[in-house]
Image 1 (spheres, one colour):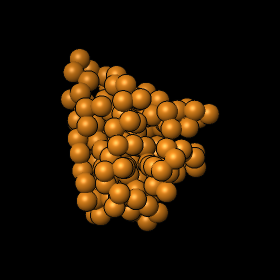
Image 2: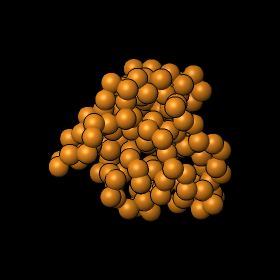
Image 3: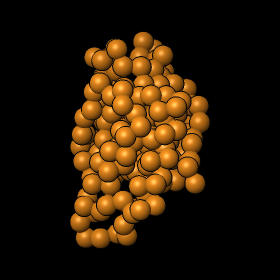
Image 4: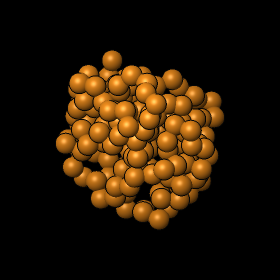
Amino acid sequence: MKTILIMRHGEAQALQAQDHLRELTQRGRQQADHVGQWLAQRFNPQGLLVSPYVRAQQTAECVKEHCRGFTLEQTCDDIIPSANAKTAVDYLQALTEVHTEIDTWLVVAHMPIVSYMVAEFCPEQMPIFATCGVAHIDYDPATMRARWQALYSPN
């Protein structure tokens, strides 16, 4: 059984023309720091997929201050806000098959794709994520079945 943690980035600057360049606010950094501590205490993820958008990269950097066990880190264009959730989940499932040594995966991305990814794994669920919210899913690569566990929100 694998643990999949799907996380929305921290609070970001107001909308602007170049969405991919929006940075975290001070509150967003505090949220990411808090969630990083929480993740380190409860899960200690080893695999990391992060959106190339600045706010997601900054969130991941805050988390990595606390979670130091990452053996695989990847920036992934398949988890930007407008990406296809099925493609993203297919890619993550493939990674779990290739990297069998990794038991816990963290995905740092955006609304709405984080909700859509959860729905791909667990069709009965499509949560609305608060900033820095984390969905916890148990996933069995042998059967390709997932089980919803919880949604954590730092707010």
